[in-house]
Length: 227
Image (cartoon, rainbow, N blue to C red; front, side, top):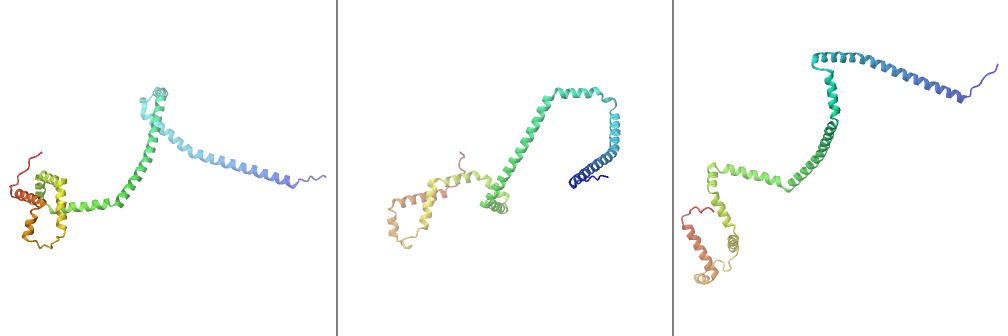
């Protein structure tokens, strides 16, 4: 009797193939089992959908005809270009919305940065102090005071305008400088010295302006004519 000896390599290869086939068969069995389970789960759902569809169509009754469905399909096919144009516009609107969102984020970031700069520069603190000043004005002045201010606002503004003219501001600045300047005679001025000062054209001009001011103070104030 002849004994056939199979090399170990071939025997190992044969076992590997058998293991592979066994794994494939087991995998197919699991797939069939999963499909059967899915089918068993879907059958009640499908039956429920069919029943629901029948009930819904029964409610429609004669209002729906098969020709209506064909007519709708033909209109959709006939207006394919219009539908595509609407879809293109919808896509363009979505792109615009995306760009607007990006731009909005940039604007928001810029706004936050500007607000931070304003806060660092002190604008908000200045506005807060301004509100405090406004509160003090409201508490210190009555409604009658505000009404009186409104009645005389034109005169006040005209007076401020006249006072801020360059020549008037120059006179006021010179007067302030003269008051601040220390006198050279320590305040001991004799009558003769005063009379000598009267010979100075600037002194005479200044006294003339002071006399005009005194006359203006003595006059009865009248409302200036409106421009």
